[in-house]
Image (cartoon, rainbow, N blue to C red; front, side, top):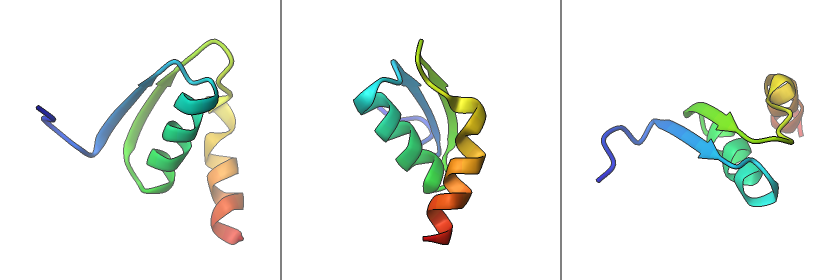
Length: 53
């Protein structure tokens, strides 16, 4: 059961997890991404660039 659909945690932010994390963040979800190769520090910058397109 999903207790709060606006809070998302992506465990393993590789190819698929990273796509889920980016999509969730773009849709305004409260996101926490965890993964060895995730560049979550640039997420806000990347989302802003995507919205401009």
